[in-house]
Image (cartoon, rainbow, N blue to C red; front, side, top):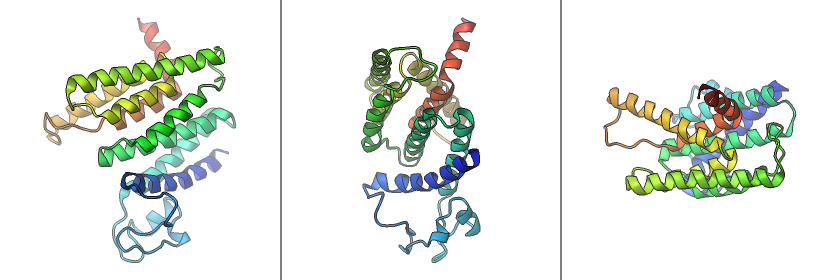
Amino acid sequence: MIILFALLGLAIGSFLNVCIDRLPQNKSIVLPPSHCEACQHKLAAKDNIPVFSYLRLHGRCRYCQAPIPRRVFWVELATGVIFALLAWHYGLRAELGFMAFYACLFIIIFVIDLEHGLILNKVVYPGMIVALLLSLYPWPWLNESMGMRVANAAIGGAIGFVIFLLIALVSRGGMGWGDVKLAALIGLATGFPLVLVAVIMAAIAGGIVAVALVTAKRRQRRETIPFGPFLALAAMVTLLWGSNILTWYLGLM
């Protein structure tokens, strides 16, 4: 089962690459079929085998030899690995499908913000709707009524939104509005109080990376870095292990 989900993840990773390429350009993710962006040649089925086609073609288009972005390989591979780990962690339960959805959602947000500095409404808003609907599901580790689960999701979304709205207003451009909406989405997905775990982890990770980049002279002190990738990564970690992290932290206190 784990191998099957790994293969499924590789295939879905290929589709995620299409979304990452086309959504920032307001293009359809269905038409036209997969093609080389350099020569516009339609790709054959043998050129669309996730991971393996990239390796076999040495990262270049078969027809014009234009380089294929390395991101294509890494997104496919990462999605396959994540799906395999989720299948191992959850087994054949509904939670597996829900977490696979979140993984795909946050991979798209992670890469688009990293490459373009954009967090797209067309990705975040549908994600909010699905996250609110998924709060209706009785997760095994939550001994709460359906109304309480929905309320916790709504409170988490409001807290995430308000925290980042205040940061955006105070920083005067230091925090993008896309990050504010993404924080609301993460709050809806994780609920209260786990939204605080996600926000704190993202802040710590972003601070460490920012200091490292400035120290290595890869960024200037006043040069901004996309914060969406850190939020997306922290959200996924929180969805998987947030309760354990919170319990561990409260134990220290």
